[in-house]
Length: 366
Image (cartoon, rainbow, N blue to C red; front, side, top):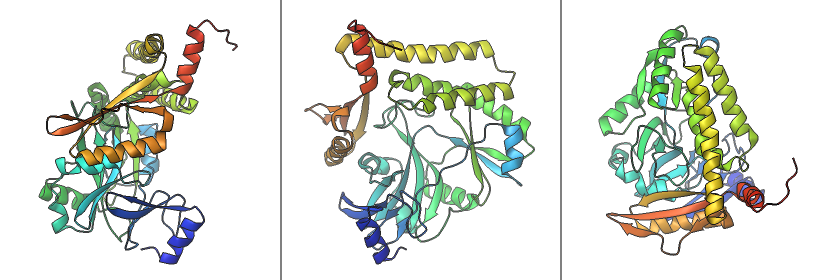
């Protein structure tokens, strides 16, 4: 728990933010406070949902495994989605985004994927999960594990008031007992199992998966390792906003891909190079086409809500944080079967301006 005076002082100094959403008053930490990391969530009784920690990346299996692990670890599939922490408070389920906000979309859809009865048996449980699929309101890309709409994958469990994560055995047991949908587990390995892991990662690469998160039994030591194909997939998904993302987004993925190819020489290098070129050019060609057609470069998102009020809360949040960069039609949300459909567009300013100027015949200087 955090002391009330510490929370009040943090809010006064701008180190925390007091918020209210869907009947819950809470605070999110903008900086570390009282030993809790940024993006931790403080609930009304001052219990804390810790911010989810960043996981370090290894670029080389052969060099990285023995440096990061001294014993066995589990290989869990890394799902290309967005991270949420789910709990129940005052009889209602809430899903918090990685930044510490109540996510109206995830909060609305969580009951589609988990039985709320899990919180009857485990009232202090916090589910750390990835929500992924083609119909998310946050991501341009998706995962091959979800063909339509979205799905939820639990990858860690926490308990309120207790540090760290539950160990892997307890996580497996609770997921199995309560029917929680887990992130796929691909086996248990050791630091010397580079050949077996290389075969696994190449299979996942061929399937279009993002990669692996490697975790010890107690969950304290962990690292992620991604496929070469996921780097190309990311570039294809975001190439149309080439000028609106920091250059490191692309250079980091190009570096990862180069190291991946060096470590897995059996890969078809010519096919990979062609796929990389297509990823860049197809995205940019799409951007040029959008600019020619309607004078702006944007991306259309669609997502579905169980409750209209949840969709309205999401719209309010997007308008308050996205401003003029987000275009939402006046007819949204609209009914679609048992759900409320929300479609909106996010504008990419720099690509829009640069292509508009170029296609208008303006002079541009390098």
